[in-house]
Image 1 (cartoon, rainbow, N blue to C red):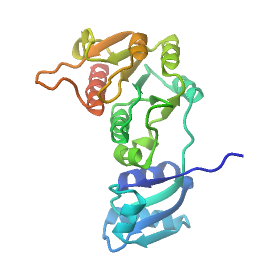
Image 2: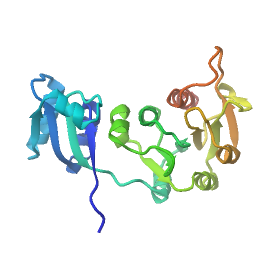
Image 3: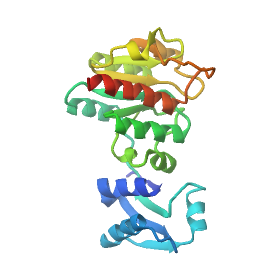
Length: 249
């Protein structure tokens, strides 16, 4: 029998999103004593109405509990979501109506970047974010906080072999478009309206060689200044909003 795993969720947006999506996962909560905030008090009321204990503690205690995270006066402990797998990806694709849109992140190490990518994915209609199980950050309290609720709405699917998963996506009819400085086509002149997976590489290193070789097409984001590349979460935003723009024409 597997041991139950718990996680801390903090920040008003992240906590509210969890309460709206799956209140049953919440175990207990902490709220900052002396903080008068209508949004915070509403969350406390929701928890208490479900018979859950909310302890009032000093701000420093919350800061220590979240290892210095920006908690906005609210922290909860919840049962961790089980990691999504390849089977979940198959189920996800089967349930999609219309052309699928996935975001694939190759070995993203910074939880702030992963959280920002999830937030943008939610905003642009991405149906799932795919990441490798190893050598990459997964869901954490920091990711959930930065994602501002998107960690509860966008499936984050971990796969053991990213290249193999990308090849499987091709067999399902998805076009793999990788963003790379060495890309041959301009993002803004590339057709991005069909079944699609946008593939982005790690901070600094970019796409790994094998990932790059699997992609059907490599595109580049035009740069007019002296900076050679964008932060991965910014690049995700640029690419995904261009996809959304083309699909809404």
